Image 1 (cartoon, rainbow, N blue to C red):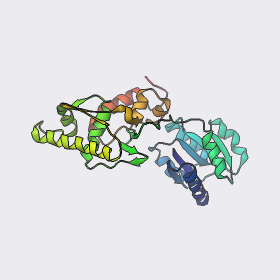
Image 2: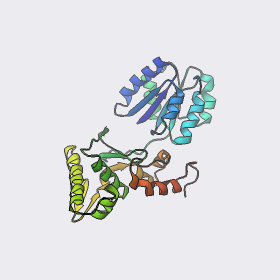
Image 3: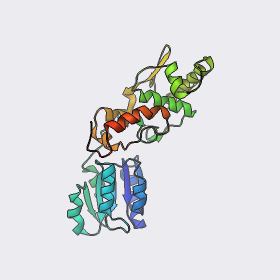
Image 4: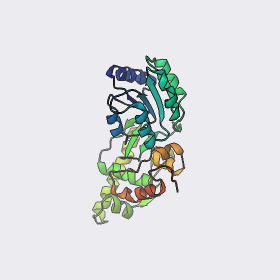
Length: 270
């Protein structure tokens, strides 16, 4: 899970970090003692937020509102030593409320009974992040590509939704300005070979589909936030904040379409 923990007491943050490492060892966790720094990092997805309520500069209730503005389906779990905050906490639809000092069992129970859950897609061996910067993961580890252009080609194939792409289309997007001659086509073949070799080495076979003159991607092997959004998954929709494959120019058309369809106020889905 993508989890953040925010408490102005460093000792609490350290304890929370150690406990969550045991409860959710494969998750992505971030911790802060300054709530404003947490707000500054909200470009990164948040599924669960453990928040102290009394903090200087910005209290946990206001921080929760900021998080929910960005991620409406985030599970807010308050950590506090004061029971009088329980009513305002649940007024903002908090997923849980834990009194300090907390135990590992209480944290685990709160996570097991969280209000919102990301879809379970464990049968998909490759996780693809299109929202924000484009990244690819296998077994929760970021995939390293031999060439940046190979990774860019993979992004293009995913952006095209699995449709087979011919050399001219690939060259126009991956090598803009280059002639569609033998030299450039050979470059593209190298990138395709890189992709196949990279995934073969990770035990993921048949992800790249090759036919005479064209190449595509096997969508059935991907857990992709963009594809989940296209299937009207509410959790994926909640994660989209206006950024899509930010490092690639070819993604501008899709990004514009997404921004027109999924407005930032979250209330207008056309």
